[in-house]
Structure formats: structure tokens, C-alpha cells
Length: 256
Image (cartoon, rainbow, N blue to C red; front, side):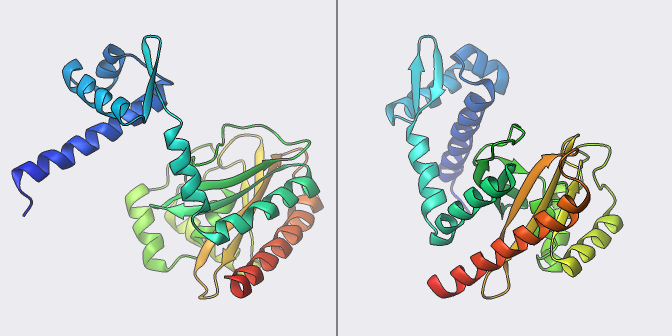
């Protein structure tokens, strides 16, 4: 049973991270705006801001507080801490160069997909994706490729916790329909996102399996519907992705 003091410490930690998240959402803010946004007393917000500033995790620019570059070091450490994550970067670059589209490497954390690497090809459509951004698994190509290769109880746990929120009118929001889609993905070895996460955008994703056969992440290529169609969508890009995934899986097995 935690003591009353330790409980206060845990709550204080949670509040500090809520303040940090609010600074990100507001793209910097003053004490009053933060307090209003978080529905907290200004004195509480000021206390947490002062501590974070003292530790150099936030900086003051004029009348606004902003997230500091110290977080960049932590984020880069997270991405570089596993050799396999580092090994995925050049493959993402190759995919972007060979397709001229946007390519990415995504892994799963807390039931969501997380962008670890992303590369923009010459003709790529720019979207609001960024390194570290979290996305729903059920409405993305890479996400569905990962979801299809998770253990059944893990899939059920994710769906129970997160659900199947609609991103567009094409998003799969029925659990039985999703299970049927995941079975097709396992059979053919790759997943489609046909305007399920964003109107006008299609994606092909392939899973990356570790030597123990657990899914490690996924590569994917995204592009506008007028380019991602026909043979290119259903054969050329899936074959390219499967080849790169196989190459990467061999590297994981023999170099780690």
C-alpha cells in the first residue's frame, strides 16, 4: 500500500507530464493559458513550470514557456537504443528513393503504432506525420500488418482498450470485419490502407518478424490514390516491401 506521501509524489509526476503535454499541444504558452487549458490553479502550474525550467526541460521565450531541446536527447536515445531500430533507417530511405513516395518504419507501443523512422521521396505527399507520433493500428497499413501478427489475446486487449475509432468513412469499425481483414493479411503477407486513415491516401505495409517469430514492427509506403492503384498498388510496391522486409529480417537474425 503506497504511503500518502508517495501517492502525492506520483500525482505530482503525473501533473508535470500533463503540463509538458499541454505545452506541446498549445505550441508554447504562458502560465494563465496553461492553467485554463488544464483547468488547474495558476499556482500549481507555476510550481511545476518552475521545477521543469530549473531542470532545463522547458525554456522561456518572452512571455511563453516552450519545450526545451533536452527532450530531443531523450527521444533520440529512445530511437537509437536498439540496434535493430538503427538498422531500419537505411531501408526506409531506400524505399522512399525507389518509390518516390513517403516511407516509414513503425513499431507498436501501448496498443498504438509509433513512427520511428520516416523518409520523404521526391513526389511524396506531405502529411502531419512526425517521428514519435502515435497512430491507430486498425486504420493504417503498417498498423494492420503489425496487428495481424500479434497473439490473439493481445489483439483482443488492444481492441478492448482502444476500440475501433473511425478516421474516415472507409475505416473498419466492426470487430468481425477487422478479424477477417487480419486473416487476409496473414495469408498474403502484406496489408492495405485504402483511405482508412486519411482521405486520398493509400498505404501498403508489411510486418517485420523477429527470429522468435514475434512481430517487431512494419515497413510501409504511402501515396495519393491516383498513383497508388492498379499493378503498382497490388504487385509492385508489395513485392518491393516484402523483399526489403525479408532482407531486414535476415539482418536481425544474423547481426544482432
